[in-house]
Image 1 (cartoon, rainbow, N blue to C red):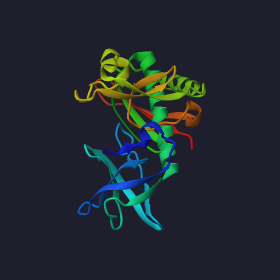
Image 2 (cartoon, rainbow, N blue to C red):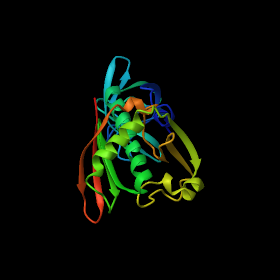
Image 3 (tube, helix red, strand yellow):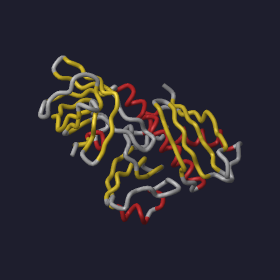
Image 4 (cartoon, rainbow, N blue to C red):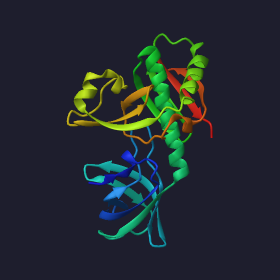
Length: 238
C-alpha cells in the first residue's frame, strides 16, 4: 500500500519514493509513498513530475485502487525498486486546497441555516459548485449567504484533520452531508475535515490550514436544478 502523505500533510509538495510496480502497457507506476492526491469528492487529481536524476517524467493522471496510488507518466518507466523524486504542480494544488475549503465553508453556512444535504459537487482550481436540496430557496438569500460565508472565512478558523470510527459518523448526520450515504459498509474509519466552529464532515481531499488562506469568495450564480434542488457556483479570488 502507498503511504498517502497528502492525507495528513497537505502542504508537503515533494517526496522521495520507491517504485513498487510498473505497468508498461498502461504507462503507470505504483509508489510506496506520495504527495499526489488521486482525486475524489469532487477534487481533481494532482499533476506534476517524477524525476529520475535529471530525467523528468510528467505526471498526467493519478488514481488509487486496492494496491495503492498509481501515477500515469510520460516517458519510459523505471524498474521496480528504483528511487524517484516527485514534485507537485504546487500552484494548482494550493488553489485547489483554497477552493475545497471554500466549498466546505459554504456547506457549513448552508447547513447551519437549512440543514440541507448536498446532492453533488465539483471543482477546478479557483472555481467550484455545490448542489443542495433547497426546496424553499429565496433568490434574495444569495447576497446574505455570500456575506455570511466571507464573514466566517475572515474569522481565521483553524482546519483540522481527524480520523473517527465509522460508528461516530453513523450517529451524527452532519458528518455525512450527501443526500445518500455512499460510504461502503467495509469502511470502519473516516477521515474528517473540521473547520472548527463552522463545518465538520467526512472528506478525503486536501485543505488549507485556516480559513484566511481562502481569501474572498463570490457566489457567481445560483441555478435551479428542478424539484427544489439548487446549484450554487463560487469563485475564489486569485
